[in-house]
Length: 446
View 1 (tube, helix red, strand yellow):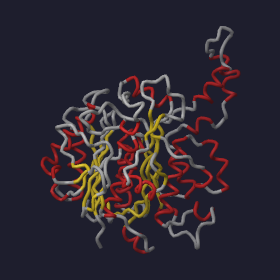
View 2 (view 1 turned 45 degrees about the vertical axis):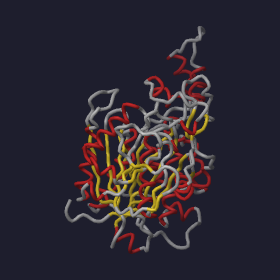
View 3 (view 1 turned 180 degrees about the horizontal axis):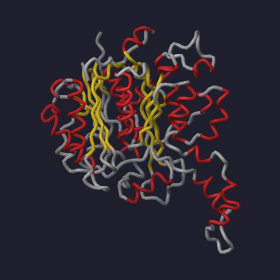
View 4 (view 1 turned 60 degrees about the vertical axis):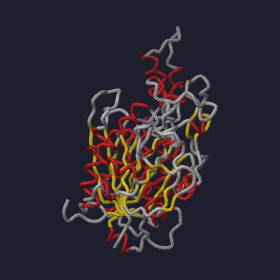
């Protein structure tokens, strides 16, 4: 795309099992903390996998204006995570939005035209609250204890709040974020599972580059720590079951001894901003987004392409868009679910594009520390990638000490490494559907 505006990252907001906020998250990665524990959110004792990555406790009141607190009643866990991440990103960027003004945290008027502030947020298929749903269903049983549509219409539905459905629509993450912060520029919701955050950031990158917005809140959030969300991967045999008594070692991305993924919750939202806009308000610039690519190559509804075709396509497109070659990449951020088939597919995709360059570039994955939280995973990965570029440091990647023989990634093992990271590339892909996306992040230079 010729003549496009330069796009930079000016704010990072994350909520992960190792910390809420970009500083605790980055510190947790640098200190090689693991946020995976025995599941506490619900009784998982009867399930094969009993470990999860759960967020530290937080109060939503700390992230929204007082006037908006009634709306918390119609926020699912996924929505509240997105709101938390958005507030953190806006604060980190030094933006004075409607939320900051309403919370009386601003020293002056808004420094962003709300008509030029957009949002692109990746979301998952939000699971219903089983306690709420079960209570209503119980009142719709007939005299034999069977579900009755007639009684559901007569009594069952009345036991659900009229706004109940609004808690579980994927677009409500972006809806609440845009209302809270007064964003009026293009808003979009992407529901492509684990690829959602990268696709959302890529869309925001394009929106700003072509001049349709000056600032975008973008990334993703999701919670997979609930019975309904774990049902499908449990039935497919994708969750690890051999580390219930050793959760710190449960998620082993690309490991020769990997046995499956760990369900998690969290997310990451970035503030992307047109360079001139950031410069005009004196913003701190973390890094520059220079390339985006996406691909899809579904060969099966249940199994990944053994050759990693969609991943390779996304990587090639992102490199071409940034006008760089694999030899210029100092850091790669692969996804690494920890499942045998998906990791094999990803390894094949990376090897086909980067070849021996993977022997030289450093690598970073967060899956061993925080697990897989679906649509929010990529947001956390991108935040980690941006921090590595900004701080010229690569943190250790948990549980990557015994890699698959076909894996060429150079993960840092014990202590952080000071590195001259000038250019990085991050990838994410959906476990079902084969959507893939990649982004090139460069150190900012005037």
